[in-house]
Image (cartoon, rainbow, N blue to C red; front, side):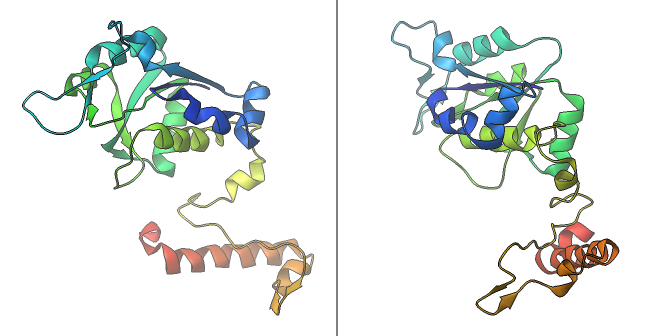
Length: 221
C-alpha cells in the first residue's frame, strides 16, 4: 500500500515513521509512506500558503493553489484523496477496512490554521474525522489513520493477534496477562495456566462479550 501525506509540517512525522512497527513495515517494503510539503507548491515567493478569510473572521485559511497543486502532483488513477477534517466521516474499524480493501494509493491532506478553502473539496474524494473534537492540525489524525491501515497489511503484525484485536466481530479484546503469576495479590486466572486450549478459547470469548457489554454495549447492537 502507498500512502502520501500532504502537510505543512513533515517533521512532525519523524518519530512516527522511524520507530517501531511502522518503521519495520517500511523497511520490509510492506508499505510506502511519503511526506509531501504543501509549501513546496505555492506560487508565492515568500512561501505563503494561507490568507485571511473573505467576509472577515479570525484565523488563516489554506489557499486552493498550493493544496490542489500538491494533490495533482502525487495523484494517479488508483489514488483516493481525503481531507483530515472534523466535519468528515468518523473513522473506525469498518471505515478502515473499507479503505484498505478499496484503495491501493491513499492521499491524506492535513489542514492547519482555520481550515481549507471550501473549493479544495472539489478535488478530493472525501473527508475523514477521527472524532468529535478539534485539533490544531490534521497531522495527528493522518498518523492515526496510517497506523491503523498499516496493521491490515499481511506481515506487519502477527495474523492471530490481528484477528483477536478489539472491534473485530464488534467485540472488544479479551484481557491479557504475563509474568509474574501473582502481583501484590492480583493473580492470573487459573484457566490461562491450565494448558487447555479449548477452555482458554471459551474463557477469552466470554470475557470479550462481558467487557463489550460493560464498556461498549452499543457495539452489540
